[in-house]
Every structure is written in structure tokens, then in C-alpha cells.
Length: 542
Image (cartoon, rainbow, N blue to C red; front, side, top):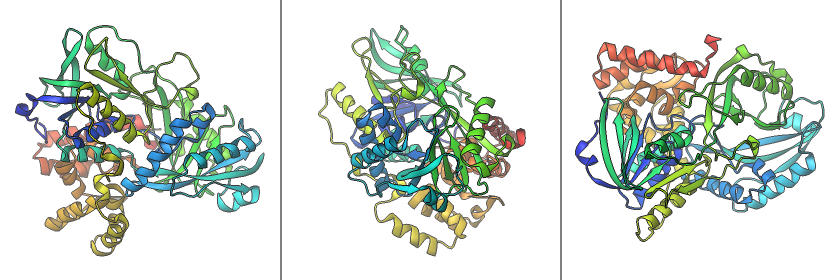
């Protein structure tokens, strides 16, 4: 039974736009379209940000390495969007210094790297962050930490940004879209398109929670299914050329190790020259990513042993004191980048620029989104909605998202709000900081839940800052339907040292009490989470 029942009468409406997929691009498009006055329905076969939008390197960045492929427009676009996110989502997006060490084995020597840094500064001419700096070998040891001294001649330091909880960007775009009139339905799997000749008139979908089918009609459908774009297109009922050639990226998460870098490291792997990151993240270290074509099950993407060995080996090479072993890895996560299909071209050379693909004239009323970066979702959304207005033959409304803060940023001075909340909420400092880092100004809403029912201040584990009120808030305000939705994509407790296994039972108990679930349903929720989280390959299973 759904926490948020489907309004069947509303589904009979004629929608301007149906968006298939509620990752960062789908939720961003929905927000932009709704804020411009369009009638928008979003259908997601699982939950928001449940795949590619969550399993990334958690960076908001210009893409320094894209300069190597002369993608100056993409870098400039990314840097401009990075600056906007710093202003529109200051609770989620923070400056991050990165160091690029100069090693003798690097395929890109110090001269090339310095040229790249200069170009990066030029392309980010309107930034609020500092420009790059060059470190001597001695300065690297003093300011960075225990990098391997063999073949090291110095380093470059520059700034990008980090988003610890990338999932929250999708959630907040969804919340804003709903505030502006959009309708979201998660666990709604699109089965096929409703066709009139070669014109898309709507879609048929299945409510997978209630096992019920619906038909909805729209003037335009946007396929934003990420790696599943081609799978969704099978619902047209006639051959359509392949659009996506997905590549797999895996990351490992470890506890901070002896002499760990004091800041993020962006380095070339000693074995194959691939750029890798070691990034301080939520008190742990995030290391990745791999990049190779993926032809497996899109619904269950798991890091393989070769990837694990590779990331551990390369970490130990650049930071010998880490002394990582496979057994010390807390967990991993893997996702598939929905990049354009271009055959057997080298994966690193495949453009990260998005493509807004108009299927007309072969199929009218259908747009597919291919590729794209987390950083550039807002600009992609703006471009897509501009095309929507053209296809609907409506005057293009001005895009409002450029200067519109996400809900957690509030309408005023976020820094001032944060200072007051920490001083006046009466919550434990660690709890208050946790709520602010995830919900921004909406932390006050959770605080109000606790004031109304002090039992909701209870921590679900002695080792995790999550409180019971977050479960109630996720159900009431953020479209959560399951405990997995809450731990993986609302509270983010799934990314603690024990992948949320220390909070799942208590979380399910609190959720069951709120939702009126039976004991069997509570046990089912616990079992479903424990089954799902095995794809993270948690340490206790190795």
C-alpha cells in the first residue's frame, strides 16, 4: 500500500509534458517546466536518484580533463553552473581544494598541467573561488600529506566543489517542482508509448507497488531514463537507433588512513594513466572511479574484483602509508554513465556533453536525453524546456532557475540561518550539523517535528546521527515510500560505516509505527534493504 496514493482523477488530465525518469536531469527538467507554468507529470520506475544520479564521484566541477579533448564549451558551461550551485545550494555544495601531483610517470607533464590550470582559470573568469597555485615538492609534503615521493617534483592546487549528498539535489529539485504544481509518481514503470501513427500521445505505466496499470496522455514525452533510455524506447513499437553506450564507474569508501591527504588528490594511475580521485568525504575517503563499457544488468550494477584490486593498488601507490587491503574497504558503489553510443571509441574520450535528441520526424512528440553531468543538470533542463516550448508552439517563457535557490537554501542568508540554528535549536551539536548538511533550512521543519513529539529526537543508532524525525519528514515531505528510500536517498544513513545496517531495524520500526504497517510489512522492508545493500559489497561480507 502506498504512503502517497495515486490521484486517479488527476491522471485523466491532458498533461503538457510527461517526464520519464526522476534522476537529477528528470527532476531538474520537471522543476524548470513547472516553474514556467507547464503541466508536468514525472514517472519513475523506482525511486528518485536511485541510480546514476547517486553513484558518482560527488563533485560539482568544471571537468579539468575535458580540456584534453578541446571541449572548451563543456568546461565553461560546467564552471558557470558550478558557480550557480554554490549560490543556489550552499547547504549542499561546498568549495573543495584539489591537488594534482606532478609525477615522472604522468602522461601529462608539469608543463601541460600548468597550461590546463591557466585555461581552467580563464574559463572560470567569473568564479568566487581562488585561482590555482603551484607547489614545490616540499610544499606538497607540508600542505597535502604523505604522497609517494618517488618521481614527485611538485603539484598544482586548484578549486572545484563537492556535494557530499548528490541524491539531495534530485530530491530538492523534486520538492521545488511539486511546490510549483508538478506531479511525481515513483515506482511507476512505463511499459509502452501510446501512439497515433508516428505521434506519441502518452504512455501506459504500471504502479509496481499496487500492481495496477494506467494510461496518461500528454502533448510531449521526455525520455530521461539515463542508462535505460534505449530500453524505454522499445515501447515505441518500431526500431529506433541505439542512443546510449553506457560506461561503468565504481568507487570504494574507506576509513581515513594514516597520513591521509589533507585535501582531495586528483592523480594519474600508475598502471594505465587513468585520472583517479582520493577525496575526503563525510569523515571517510572516497576513491574512484573506473571507466569501461558496460553490457550487464542495468538494474544491478556491482563493483567486480578487478576494479577493487585496481583502486586499492593505485591508492597504495600514490599514498604508500595507506596500506589498504581489500578487507579494509568499507563498501563500494557502482553506476552506469548514460553516454552517447559511438561504437568502440576509448571510454575516456566519449563526450560528457549532453544531447537533447528530438525524435521528429520519425517519431513526433518525443525527446530523449543522452549523457550529461551532475554539474550541468540545470542548464540541460533549461535547454530542454526551451525546446519543449518550441515543440508545443508556445511563446518561450523566461527560465527562472538561474537565480532560484533550491528549497534547502532558503530565501535569505543561509550562513546566518545556520549560525542561529546551531546556537538556538537546543539539539546536540552533531545532530544539528547533520540535519543542516542534508536539509539546509528545512532542518527547522524536522526540529518542529521533534518539538511536537520529543520521542522523534531518538537516534536510531549510537554510531549514526540520524534521528527518528527524519523518517516522518521523508514520508510527509519528500515522497518516500519505503525505508530503503529513506536510508539511501533522504537521510543518507546508508552511507555510514556500516551501510545503514546499524539503523535499518529501528528505522523500519519507526516507519511502521508512522505508516501503520503490519509486522510482516516491517520485516519485508528490513529484508528488502538488507538484500539491496549487498550490491555495495559491505566489508562484513568479504
